Image (cartoon, rainbow, N blue to C red; front, top):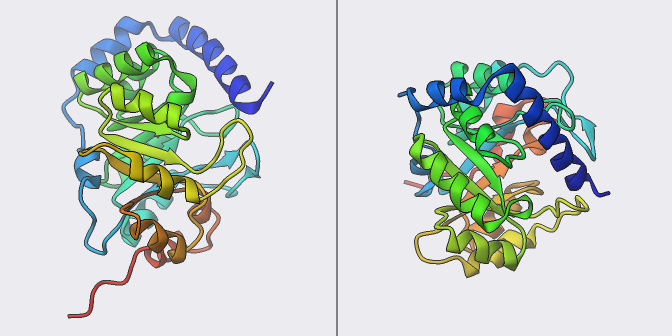
Length: 265
């Protein structure tokens, strides 16, 4: 059983456990009556002042690397990212495999005015309502783990709750699925979630196949300004960056170093 299959199996158990603690009706009530959504899509639809946008990730650990930052403080890290020029935040909320939590998202969002993506393995409407209730401004929907019907319905539900959705793809099959479901933000994962192998050329190649109006986000494996500039040359100006920033001694400066220098006056 590969890691992604194990994660999805655990998610099914988590949903059952969570629904006993907090019924769907309660989550729906909270999610449908919030009015504090921050525009995630709008933060990414055009290149930022320095020609690129970075979604900076708060990530305690990963299945392949283990703990990434000891004593990570979501509020401090969120403020560092904001100071470095982040356009938005991504927060891992998976507990068992990434050591995250909904509390990490809520604390980070309270610390800064940036829009926040809930990054988790979402497979049910329950989790979409849960995302809205915890204050997420956007959700990650991964084509690899959803049927076409699930993706369509969960995307529509997210939008009805005032949240944007980043649709993650890795293959041409994923891309076709995302396109037929009306996705606007396409997260192109350079990492194969089954093997966790990374090839940063994936986003640059796949971005050329997007439909008009679809905005790419390169995710995983962005190691330096050279990678950013290579993607910019292929029309990709949004980047979701996690480990590179989380492991840094100075996340704010590290993030700033990944943004192109402003043009000379």
